[in-house]
Amino acid sequence: MAQESPTPTILAPTILGISGGGHDTAAALLKGTKLVAALEEEKLARVRHARGLPSRAIQYCLQAGRVQPEKVDYIAVSRPLHGDRGSRASESWGPKQLKQEFPSSKILVLDHHLCHAAAAYFPSPFEQAVILTLDETGDLKTGSLSHARGNAIESVEDAYFPDSLGNVFSRATALAGFAAGSDEHRLQWLSAWGNPVYAPVFRSILRRDEDSLLSVDQSYFLGNRDERGGFGEKFFAATGIDAAKPLAEQTRADLAASAQQVLEEVVLEIACRLSARAPGAPLALAGGVALNSLLVEKLETSGMFPEVFVQPAAGNAGNAIGAALYCAHSLLGLSPRAELEHLHYGPEYSVGDIKDVLENCKLRFRYLQTREEILAAAVSILRQDHILGWFQGRAEFGPRALGARSLLGSPLGPYVSDNLNQYVKHREKFRPFAASVTEERAGEFFEYGPTAKFLASLGRIKPPSEKAFASNLLPGRPQKGKEGDPGGAGAARLRVHVVRRTANPLFWGLLDAFGRATGLPVLFNTSFNLFGEPLVCSPRDAVRSFFCSGIDHLLLGNFLLSK
Picture 1 (tube, rainbow, N blue to C red):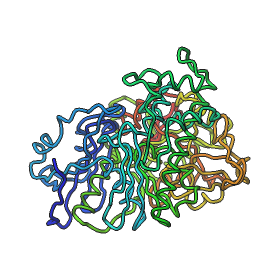
Picture 2: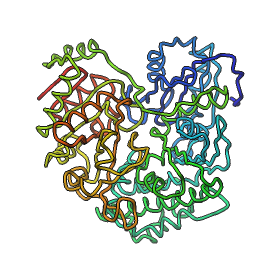
Picture 3: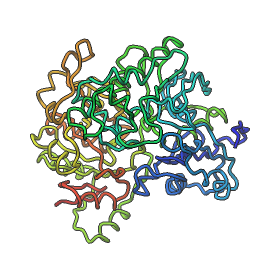
Picture 4: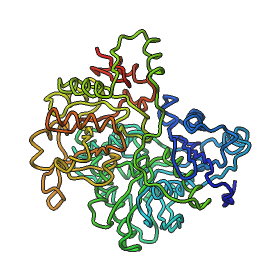
């Protein structure tokens, strides 16, 4: 279906944005320019990286917005993706099915990377910006450069499959023994434990070419083989890695460090070209590669841009928001734009909803009547170094726990980080937790950038605070800064989550109350999910995870469950 510009005849149209067809499908709903709901299909279907039409997420958005299907004015669809390494995903659900379900709606099908660009730029605080999008592949594209001003986005340059930075990183993820397309974040964190001894080989794969955005030497891969990342004999000969044997732990870490370093080098080189084209312009970033927090930190501290904004739901799910915003601003010319202040656009459950689940499961609980009782109970639990499941308010949109569906622990407890990793999350020791802190006091303990409110980057612990809790915040081997980096040589780096009172009043209240009780308004914060499942969304999800793990207590709205 051809893209066209609809005539803006409705003052505040209802716009449904959909990212579907490939993996990580999602839906989002705008009323005029106001985002009122957004959710990934996987959180309701309980299937990682859900594909096809996000029917459950669409139904949720309509319910949350109190909109009947016949009242949806526009449906903006991020064009169905191609499958891994370029094979076309099923598009059978597409516009025909949508037209049957939404007969009064005008359906617009939009370019995948255009939606990434819109998702990065329109929620940013910038009136103009350069936009960089990078992923494995979408619409056969793997990256794009754009300029944006006001409500207009102008495409400058594109990269096409198989020239894909995301694809090379995914191949390295698979070779390291993780799941490609799912575990790239694990390769990122493992990189801190290795040395970039294979970086020269990755530099040869990702060839420098000033005439194109990206250029990948395919001679290092075997065409139709996915085993061991699809790397060929040329790669194994160049690295000295034995293709016939499992990788040793240090080799895996060195592979991760090499892939991460060259990814950062390539993106910084592209960013340098962007900065030269538009001196002084800020950068907006999206696409799956933008979920790499170490990369984002490099961009923030590079000095090339006055400010960097990263779409916190940077992957395919975020295109549901991007498609809706592009329809609203670029096609319909609607104003004003709204800066993204939070990501709490998922379902919220009433006291009655939660009570029904608990009674149906025949569970014993304690009912806390007031906000003050909830906070007092939580602080008491955390001060005993127990692990607390925190299920409050509307669920987060995106892959990160931001204080609505979180597992919490005290950074002052000597064994809390070990307990979280070994007995609750059952994950590797190299995976760091986030440190959530109140905005008002964050500067006392950390150096961080604006994206810290979305957990999109890394921060640094200020030296006076390091002795208090640094060893607990960074399980195992801390990541250290380099000479000349902001924060000084050896400053411990970690994921910082700065919480604004207006964005999440209850979670801010917990951090503040914990700070008044201990002097430290900081808590461990990791995602409330187990065994590779999506973040919990409903009360039943939370209860099941609570009883299948080493979590000590669960605060589910006003209800406290303890083991």
